[in-house]
Image 1 (cartoon, rainbow over the protein chains, first blue to last red):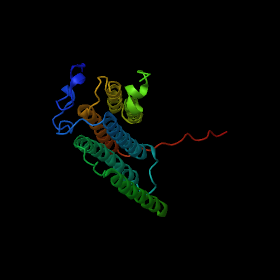
Image 2 (cartoon, rainbow over the protein chains, first blue to last red):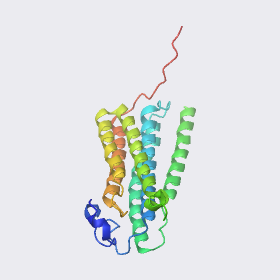
Image 3 (spheres, helix red, strand yellow):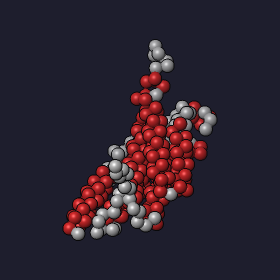
Image 4 (cartoon, rainbow over the protein chains, first blue to last red):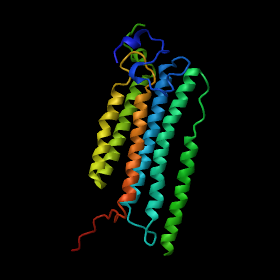
Length: 140
Length: 110
């Protein structure tokens, strides 16, 4: 982008090639403080890295762990939900970025994030599942 | 006022710099995942590693024009990339069947 759009633009016009159709940036409202926009972007990126970490954890569990004796599907039972959770966190993180950006533009309070609950719930469930798999493997 | 080149004036809260670094961290995360996938399936690993410069570049061009505004395209690209990596991992995990797992090298017998 050249500086043509940036110099005098008050942020209400479309911002060249960066403006998508469902952008959350094209809504009514005013351009928020740049620090807020950047902070929202960093939050999204942090969730993206969390998602990648979940994916690589799931991948590692299935591919690197030796099989549980007697519970041949044990590794998949633990690893696949982690990978699915990773995809879910990535998509939800983007949706929440759009929502937050919209709220920032309109000066509304930021909506509550569902990601902490989603992450806590799923990881707790996976932890319990791992315990069950270990017990089954020990019994056999 | 006395220091027009004060970084606080050019980049309040160093928000831009921190955001650029956040993109860099994300690119490094992609590299880590790509290397892990590379060990299991070479073409898939190469595909994931190809995303690294894309993500890195998204951060480097962060707000070179004066105004900092939302960049939905780039964020959508990043979110799509993470989701794609997750789907690739899912396919690998379901298709490669049962791997023997990683066994640490056993001690050589004397």
